[in-house]
Image (tube, rainbow, N blue to C red; front, side, top):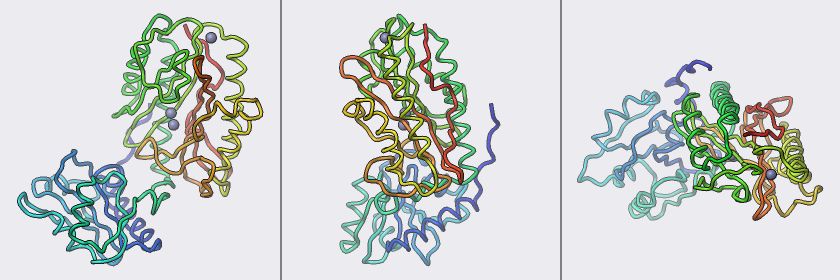
Length: 373
Ligand code: ZN
Ligand code: ZN
Ligand code: ZN
């Protein structure tokens, strides 16, 4: 296991806030309104508990970053790693936080606002400043967090290695005769043992359940002869893991092997399409063509991949119509699948990062069809 990476510094956060402010300005936005959640964590290192009281980071060109924060939370906010670059503007219960916020904004213009900002807060701001317009941050600046720096890549690689170690161990636990949720509990425990502080999903989709890509675990007892789709991930040191492998309980049939081979070839083709300058949709097309050529086009029912960083699903998306060029430092999944209704499914997923020379996998366990007991 790797050690704990050096924490991000106040200067790291100041630099991210500067770049975000510049990107907003270049996109013609009056500024950015950042709510608690992944954007705020990435920009400031501040992760307040969920509360209905308004906390809002205001980024505007030509103005220092300001964090509007409830008075009782201000001492914690002041301890955030990014706090040295922030001016705190606190508001006390009984006062109007939207008035405090509105004073920091112009009376016109368009602001990018975090996707996960509460509607209540957006409506409160709109009431105060009816001529100010808003746009979802991932719509206005979809690539804001997409290109990872070396320290972020190190964390993503460590999260990937932890997920890989989890896969190696889960193959030995015994599947036949156990319920999906029991194997899922093992996945959760293994991810945490390998340093995850948060587990976002532990999909164990056995037999016909495998035909549902986002099947949550259930009471089904896994049987010999089942294909089992495993898909699991979460956050380690603040950065995400997400990997899928499909295993078989006992010896697979020729058809099960053949479908798995198709998905493996599709995953490889998607991976090989990764290089600087290729479009996101090229990765999807490369993987999808292999599945279509094998006659399974209608059974690949989702996009090929999604970005990953301080969350486990974020832009960029590897999907038809996404012309965004790949840039070194981007990180995303390549996860084609085939889902045969009522029968079984297969998915193989690695996190891949773009380098100058092509793709580099952050998941490196075998993609052969593994048999388990
Ligand atoms: Zn089987
Ligand atoms: Zn996944
Ligand atoms: Zn994924």
